[in-house]
Image (cartoon, rainbow, N blue to C red; front, side, top):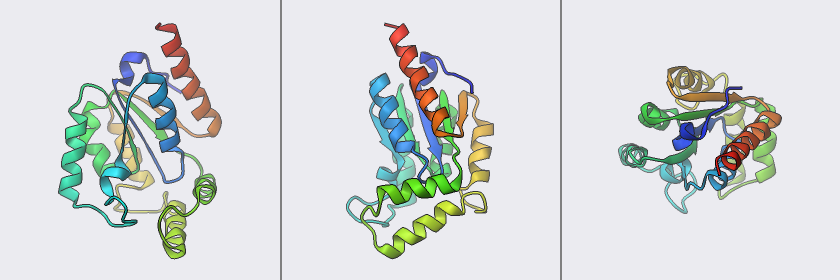
Length: 177
């Protein structure tokens, strides 16, 4: 695992399959480095309307605008949005947990505004991460983004990796005071 330095964390992006803990990690890191978070889900979906996507060009424009800032922390699953800011990313974190662990995490957080049917579809979508083709939310798309990133980058493959990464950032900020 490659550890970033504080300067690398200026423009940080966390991505991975649904249920990996992207939002949790972003919140933890955001508190440590004192940075607000751009949740790509909040830009992608219409507020208060589960499963209603906003217009692609509008969402893309908002992500690009957010990416122009000097410092930011973004998290999400959408490779097409990640790609829009990839050239500005100074630290890329790919959380790549086994699908069954992701599914357990999604089940633990429960239905968040949709129906039982949409929840089952979400579980199946998470399960198909490594098999999906022609999707910016697939493993292969995420691998391409990771490979293309020229900034600091790390793949976290377990809860232990996530905890160690979080602690390394905490230690880095403590030693810089």
